[in-house]
Structures are given as structure tokens and as C-alpha cells.
Image (cartoon, rainbow, N blue to C red):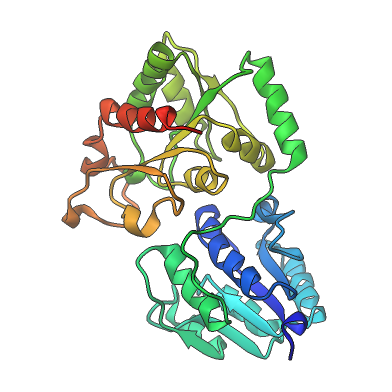
Length: 338
């Protein structure tokens, strides 16, 4: 079979940060198979991140909460007659999708590396990955499909034109027509977060030192955290903006700097080429940090404090990070040549 006849399906359904850590591997797959078809099945809410990517043919939405939607998705996969499926997620549902696609070749992590060990039974090729970062582990899967591990990761993403235009208009309404900083105080669980009062102090410092407005973003269920940042920032007046995913891409892509804990927006900003400062406590930035050149990391955790347990209190490692630490890291990025 020629490379042009190859038909690849990428399976990575969720979440945002994990999807972004998969993109460099898919870019490497595209480089190795320039004429092949490469599609990606992903939960519908994350599809806008991938749509328009020159590395992909079709972005196929998966309806997680709809049985009929899932059936339609499988029918679509089978109609496309893929020759190879690569499952980056390693769950029963993702590996089952790979099997139901009908592809004769199915690549995934072996049972010791899959998130759910039993998922490996649905693969025809089981890979023991190499590397430390999640994105490096993902490279191992596409290497099995003939790709080479690149020296520098690539993120072939496209900011949706409608989202970019919409967020420009909304910023203009707030009087923000020049440079701005974005802070994302949310996180999947409290132990990964930095206190709202420190973000508030950070907003005041940016206004005083750089005369830059700050835009505060939040995800679902995180508005109260963003509002705490606004209260703590008084007398500074950061702009609180709730966005669609398309608008978020436009906002992050043009920010002078993005500051956030280990979260989807941090990784999205890095993938879009924005200068980022990642605040890391219990999670290991060597494994889960922004996988992009030039990203700044503030990390004060002791080795024994590294943990992925979803704790409900601030971690001691995050509390060691001072406003001065973050200002120094952001200042170095703001002074760096564009």
C-alpha cells in the first residue's frame, strides 16, 4: 500500500490539555505521510481547536452523552475505511472506538501505560513509550506508524476567524485596543490553583509597572474564582470575560503574556505561540508542562510533594510561589524580543 492510500484515524476525545499534547505527534505523522488521509475523532466541544488544521482531513465529533450520536459516529468511522487507528487516550471507550472503526491496524499503549489496562486488548500493536513528557510518550505511538520524533514540536492550529473578530470587538468595548495580559486562575482541582488574592495583586502590579490591562478568564464553574480575583485587584480594573472556545483561541493567541496554573488555557496559549508563565505545584512540569519552546515555569514543589490526587485545598507548593516570582518570570518574557 502506498503512503497516499494510507487512511489514519487519531483517537483522543478529551480533555483540552491532553488534546494539545497530542497535536505535535499528529504533526509528525503528517510530515511522514504527506499524502495520506489523517482524521481525528474528538468530543464535540473540543472540535473547534482542531478544525482548520492543515495536518488533518476531517474532524469527527463524538457525542459523549448521546447513545444515538455515538452510533452515528461509529458508522461514520466505518464508512471511512481507515487502514490504521492510533489511540492516544488508552481508555476502554477510546480503544473500543478504535476497534469498532474496523481498521485492521490499531496502535495504542501497552497495558502498563494505558490509563485503563484492559484497553490494550483492543489494539493490534501495543507500544511501550519512551520519554518523560506526555507529548514525548505520544511521539512513541506515531513512531510505530513510521513518523520521526522532531527536534521541535509543531502545532498546526488555526485560530477561527469568527472567534478572533468577536473577541477583538469585545475587547474594544472594554477599552482594550492595545497589549494585554491574560490570567487564568482556574484549574481542575484546588491543589493546582494559586490563590485569587495573589492574582489580584498581580493585576495591580502589571498596571503599575507595565501599564497593561489584564483580562481574567474562567472555565465552566469557575466564575466565582474570577470574581474573587477582580475584588482582590481593587483599585485596578481587570476585565472579566467569558468566552467561547473560538474566542478564547483568539484572545490567547494575541496576548502579550498568559499566566495560569496547569490547565487547558495555559497549554492552548503555548500551542498558539503566546508567551506563557505556568504556575506549577503538585503536578510535574517535566511531565505536564507547556510543551513549547520559551515557556516559563514557576515551580517550587519538593520531590515528595508531586501528586496527581485531586485535593480540595491549596497545596503548600503553590503557596510558596510569590507574586514577585511570577512578575519576574513574566517580566523576562515581556522584555524578550518578539
